[in-house]
Structures are given as structure tokens and as C-alpha cells.
Amino acid sequence: QIAGKKSGHSIAELGAATDLLVVAGGDGSILRVVGQLGENIKPIFGINVGSLGFLTTASSSTYREAVECIARDRINFSQRALLEARVTLGDKRTNKMIALNDAVLSRGELSRLVMLCTRVNGEPLTEFNADGLIVATPTGSTAYSLSAGGPILDPESGVFVITPICPHVLTNRSIIVADDSIIDIQASDPDYPVFLTLDGRRPIHVERESIVTIRKAKRTLPLASLPEASFFSVVRQKLKWSGSNV
Image (cartoon, rainbow, N blue to C red; front, top):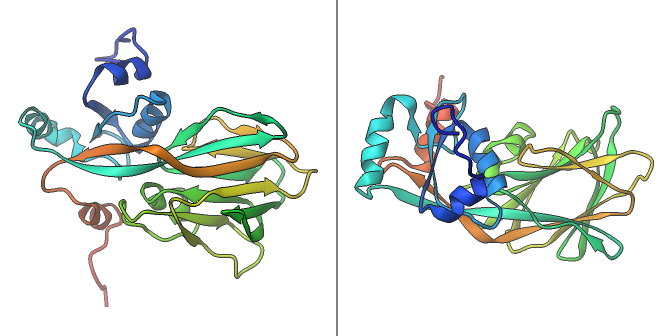
């Protein structure tokens, strides 16, 4: 929508016809746009009018400065890794699904742990007995994974993080893997449903014996920022890090 009116074009169509997408909203708005772009990934400049704004670079009060920087080509770009997920059941496979933040496998409505057998590059990692499992990009490391106890990753660190959600085994902790790894996850208990969610979008029911394969997408997202902005300044500001209080 533009000024409250529908443009008549889909996000994918706009992406195919533009060099830079300016998204006004919060992190959720950017995630929704990325999900709708499909293969037409284009640079995104975020203006924060939401509540958090890890992915946005300008606020609603500084949008004039942002527009001037865009017009004068005075913006920087951080190449953000995307992940892709596919669900395989026998000889059937879903289309590739793209996410900027994370892919989450979680239990359904029943308040019961699920068992998720996880392999990395074909080698068994472990069977997580937990509420669910998060596979996050460095960009997504400051989202759900962080809330679940995962580490903060530099956006261009070249890794993914696998974080269990409320694991029953206390030694189950986040593990960092190279972003060229192939991660396969399969629900071990057929009696309880498991759902796959990418970037908080509509959940997909993972059928019994299905394998969810997660890997790095071939394309990256160029995320724009103002010249003076940096990842660490955003972390300090958003997480209110101000040094020792002692």
C-alpha cells in the first residue's frame, strides 16, 4: 500500500521493477516483504515506525535525512544471508521457502515436548526433546533464538545457529554451524504434530516421517543502512547496553 491506498501490484512485482525497496514499519514488515519477494530479492531500506527495529536503519523522525541519503547514494549495504527450507516426504518435496530470520519447528496445541532428530551434513547431531527447535541466520540471532538463550551473531559471520526451545536435557544448548551446512530435522514421535514456521509466517504441518531440510539460500539480501549506522551501535541501542552498573 502507498499512502493507505493499494498500488495494484504485488510485492514480488514491485521488487522485479525496482532497484531499492523502502519499507516503513518494524522488523515484521521487512520479514513479510522478504517472504513475498520470492526470487526477486532486492535491496531493502527500512524506516522504523514499529516497536523494535533491529533491521531498520532510520526512524520516522529522521526519514527526511534517509530520503536525502538515498537520493545522493550515501547508503551502505550489509549482505544478509537467507536460509531456504524444504519438506520432503518420500518422493514429494515442497517448493523452496525463504527466510531472513529463522526456521522454527515447534509443537502444536498440546503442551507436550516433541522429539526432533537432527543431522548436520548427514551426521547425527542429537535428538532434541524440547518445545521446538530454531535454526537462525546471523540476522535472526537477535530474534527468537536470542529469547531462547542463543548467542548474538555478527550479521556477516558466515554461520547459522541451532537453538532448542526449552530443552528437557539441560546440556542441550545452542550450537553454531557453518552456513554451508545442510541441516536435516525429522520428528521422532509420530503421535504428536510438529509445525514449521519461517519468519513467523503461517505454520506448515509437518507430516509423519517428513524431513525438513534447511540450508543457505543462493541469494543474499542487501540490507541498507545510513552511513553512520553499524550493527554494534544498533545492538547497544536496542538492548540498552551501557556498561557496568556496579
